[in-house]
Length: 180
Image (tube, rainbow, N blue to C red; front, side):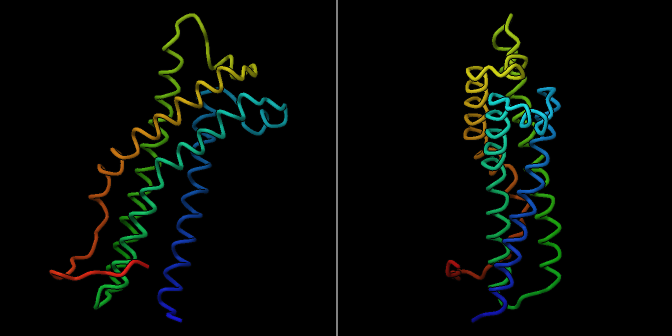
């Protein structure tokens, strides 16, 4: 058993868990402000429509931020497997990974918030957000679909824009790293 690879795996699990927790907190907090709802109160009241929208916002944000965690994980793998390993590189990598993930979360929340606001503006005369607050499942399903489509279509652009932030180590010509 390779202890270094085991520890790297544990670091990745912790990183993924922390990013998920922060993303859940940001998504619920941001969406509740836009919808003018309290997710805990909506849950207590059994507002299925608000529950659908909150759940979809979490999945959508996960789709948007997933690449940040994967890119960081790949950079960690390359850094650990590149000889010689420099502990200073690990510190720099952690700092840049935090920036990368933070920007991904921030941009992801902003994209979803704009999607909700656009949804509300698309049909004058109907306050879709009020309909969701009242429990209108049809409005919740349409808003949820918009959030998912936004996440699917903007994730590649977000990934391309932010991948340059990760300091991948320079590999010698012809070097191949085995997947791990």
